[in-house]
Image: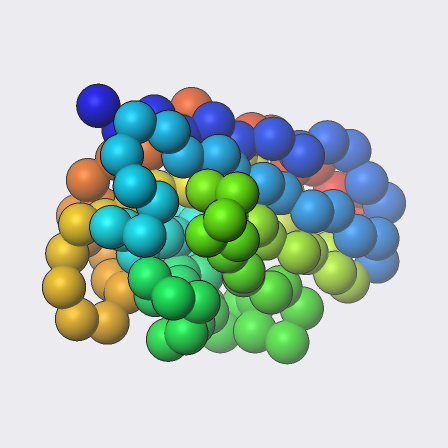
Length: 125
């Protein structure tokens, strides 16, 4: 059974940075392409970024492009999200997700098979 555990969330001022990490256990990390999603109060879960099995094929939501960077360390079974120039509208619970799908990493919630429990990111103005 795949387990995903996020870490690194917290409170930061606008313009600051945070780095989220997600550890996968239970199955080989390289079986999955990985994604980050977020959900703000009263809103639907939305795509943030995704990355292919070997670290290529990265894709980003327009709202975070140029500010966030997704990466993976296959030796450590870890997914990362470096978030710079944070804005109050980035405030949300951030979830990592794993997909056993094929082709390009999905940008859809339904394209993922496993989810972490989420980590809160709060950006103050």
